Image: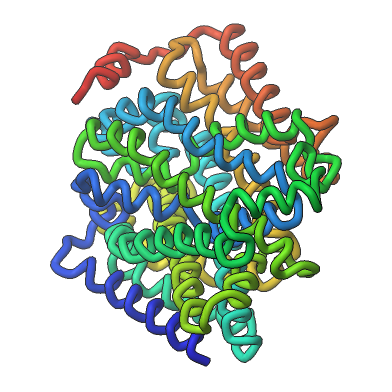
Length: 483
């Protein structure tokens, strides 16, 4: 049971660090949700890496490399490419947030387009997509603990315990606790990914080159699109990259996390540095590909990374990998809980009660909502029936529909509330309908992109048909030049 003991030690240490991070801090929504807008370069980098690189990175990527092959490489592209629009739009968002007290994505909708129901609807959709993403994290954590303990700790028990621990340090410390835990998580994950990605090919094949030579000989179709499944062809690859770029810009939790920076320059520097972290993903795919030969015939491809580590290294190393994997679930889950709870306390609850609660009341409500979301996320994880990668793509299809409002709201003065609302509803209906009917991909195209194209078209059509809203876009331009 050594691996389980190591995993437990890492998780307990991280929980303590997360709880202690909030000591001597004011209990208000801005501090709890976005760290008082005071994080520097390293803290923002650790936080953003901690919430972007999740159990999908460790288990989902290696699982897709193992079962599907070439389509997995879409993840190597969208993460660096997403930093290009964010380099220009992220600092504008930060400056507007500082000036107008924004904390969440719906706050941006409220400031730019006005009204009451559109921001509330955005908050509701955001909370739902975050629950799907939270489900993904808990599913991955359950797999890790169950596998590392040889089934002695059932997946359900691991999910329940993890939900409690995450809720604990989020309730106490908010996003600051997640940021400090992410330092531990990023260090462990980087070491685990790079070491395993180099050592496993070297031990079993004599190096990365010989490994791919063997795999290309034995499984040539696995390494060209569409890989091992005909539906993941070139159209799916390109459109999935585009949808994921759009989603990366408007994930509600990463949107809020950009407000934690102390300046617009910190946001820019983070966009420059973030692609370096993607190198870890490359090493993880090496492990997934190598597992095809080392541990063939796995029924669940998401276990490929853990299975090949168990077959290659001493049991203590499996515990280290498992601990890193557990934290890749806990950190992003913590940030998602903070964001989802803030959406309820700041953007949904005022609409329900018909008035704006005090800042202290909103902060108290948000902290207690964490418990409810933890319970719901755990229940969803226990009933999960999809692979980790499939859950992530489903969530990205939803949040990508926010990108027309974010992009056009900053650069196009004719974008109106009616246009944005109509486009958002149309995009969600199209993307969700195709997915629920099993039509994703649709004629080879990612369903999320189909919805996104319809979304943009409706926004343009409706906005141009109506008089532009009175929006002082000079303040947006000024935000773009702020330092």
